[in-house]
Image (cartoon, rainbow, N blue to C red; front, top):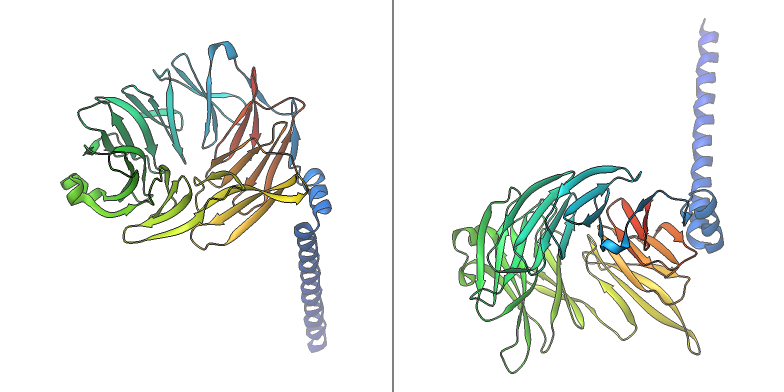
Length: 393
């Protein structure tokens, strides 16, 4: 009996050793393949094309027909491709099927998206709609004319209003559409705003043209204080003034603690009690975008010989300052599009989709020039004159 137990124990032990050896062997193979994928461009292209199926081409994808004569506007957010046309907002899923058809009375749209929300306003008008999923969450009309809007991932919305007795007015709404407060500015123009992901802070980018030197100012407002008293002297908790003759162009809150601010020639990180220079723009920078979730994206050129250049995408994490690099094997890029952690690079007859880690998500090739593209968190649309081709990211 003891001998039989010894044999069973030995058999179990042998099986355990075999399993350990197998998993070690498998881990070694994975490490070798991963290392080669990272370091060997030819091998990486083979894997992307033939194994991971990251390369797709025109006319092999699901498409949505559009009528160019009706001047439709196309957008992507969350998992939807959307078309606004003749006061109808139509949402399509990744299979090209209609998920919703909403009445949205907008002619010249201003659009802001974040996560599961899309805000649409009439540029120079009074109407604004907040949409999530397949429903209009709320809608409102303002006094004056809307010049800018911003929605955060929780559905809070800021609206910049002009053409009132003030230079600018900023209205702040919660996710249910209840106005929380208005900030009235009599001496400067508001260019951009953003709301922190925890809804606690509102960043406003202003430009003052009336001094001898143009100045841009970023003010961080406490939402809690502004609800009590929106007077900037009370509710402002931090102010950053730009370098002389710098114009602020965009603000993006990348986490609850800091906002990334884009000026003509540099990018500044602003918190509720400090600021830090992140990047100085150079003449080799072709495109810069601060709208990633945790990074900024810079497309620049590097000399590769006499009168020839190579192009690359630098993705700089704004929290750690670490950089990821993606090399573009292409001619001059046309432009970039960003949503969440996705970057779409339009190369005229090709689009490369890259994530913020610098890894290729999808490569799309076309026999004709790509007119435009839209990109969401998990979906993208390649826009032609009469159709939009859908790509799952």
